[in-house]
Image 1 (cartoon, rainbow, N blue to C red):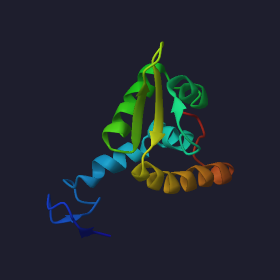
Image 2 (cartoon, helix red, strand yellow):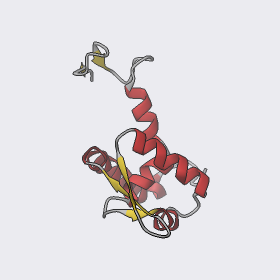
Image 3 (cartoon, one colour):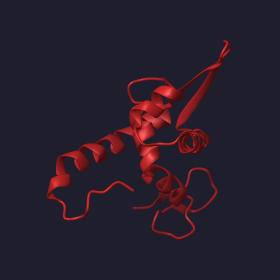
Image 4 (cartoon, rainbow, N blue to C red):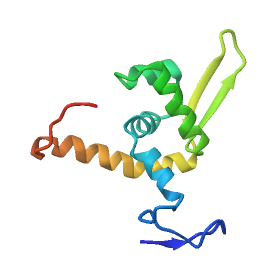
Length: 124
């Protein structure tokens, strides 16, 4: 399904077109750590350490990279509170909240249907 581009940057959005900028957003949202970080932030803002504990298995480096990418895309807002030590929180933006809905549905589907699939269930 394609729609007219409201930004005027190209004629229409179509993720099946090789040069469509939609693919970059699809790539970001389809990334395991991005999808899980967005899900972890659904209930409200979290500090880096709390996010890392919630996303078991993610390294600090990968979490930092993931948060930077989803922040740059406008899905997450980073707020620094002046304190010693610095207090930094991450929170979904309205755009991030709208992305969290289909991602939540995907997570639920995976949990409900994993046992029915024939694919190996080993984490990457």
